[in-house]
Length: 261
Image (cartoon, rainbow, N blue to C red; front, top):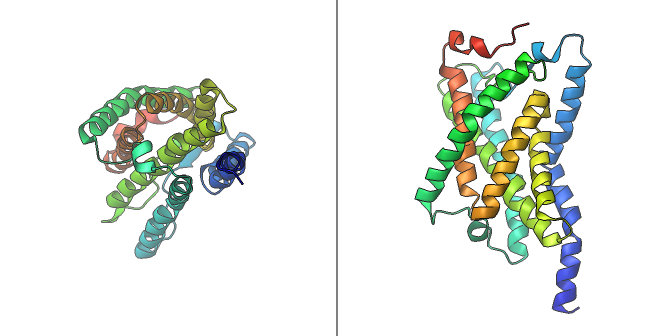
């Protein structure tokens, strides 16, 4: 088999590869999110009166819960290693070509913080508006009990979410769709953004819309800079603020985010 035919044969396998990688990770989450949203919409009480809990506790026994949380974080990163391996198998250098390295720390931290600030406040207002309009469930960023390890675990969870989503939904997916060569760039951006929105549907329609917009912004930024690292920084900052802030802020400060029928 010639090199050209071998490369063509490899590219023809990419759609199946994408499906497998996503069904082992965020694509599976998207399907469960649709099921969760359907259950909420068909329940007796309104969507806005229901809750969507992130980082739920898994056991009343503190150290068993800690073990479960840490193992869940580690295992959830395995699809990232799979995607990394598949890209390297095909001769790519994911660290350099996807911009997941430490060559430009100032750029990554600066743009990451800027993106987090630009998305964070409008996102919070969107969450509030969607909740008051009855389009979203009440989001509980942390369902963990208060232990000495709660905040470190929430920070680890935030970073894990950022790595998983940005590497797969932006770096890996956009790279593979470009290699397949059947979609125009606007459609590639839409595919990435729709995937990001879909696995947040368990939060309601507001979660889908907000994350779709975020997905468009992040995809455009990546295509412009070819760096995933600032997106990981931005996503980490957003989730750390949400998870740890919810855990540490007084309940009275969070009352305004609750649904007011």
